[in-house]
Image (tube, rainbow, N blue to C red):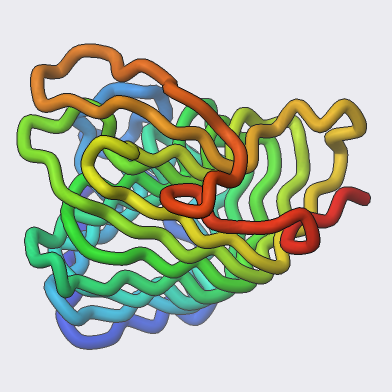
Length: 218
């Protein structure tokens, strides 16, 4: 496909495989790439396989649902969430992603993202609250029933100084015998474009919310 598919309402891809070409033919980390799918506020995308190159994956302009969506080789990001309302809700239900050099889910807007029953392997960060966007928000993520296969850098990265939270439960990690994958990392976010500094990691009861029993290593 050479042009972004714009979705309002519901789009069922029937598990067909989509990949970019032409202007959408990139698979690198260029921040200016367009998405293969752009979802209007309230839209649902389901039963879709994104092949390579996948450009900038999926953009949600407001609340959205991604159900049984699979990324075979993540380009810049698998999905970016851009809603500007604190009440925006994004749901990733099922599906999976692999080969993400950097981020899988990029949260640039406001609101709460729930990632449930998802699989990820060979990745940088499963979730990142934007660390240096021009406009910053308080953001929240709920991660449950997710299977993580290394190598990977972090499951969740949040900005503690903006009040972000990450709640994790039922996470299973494999292929990480040395436990190198950070479960939850806290950053000092900014709106100046500078690279944010990591300020800590692990459960703190406030921003990174989970217990030992919520993470299983196999």
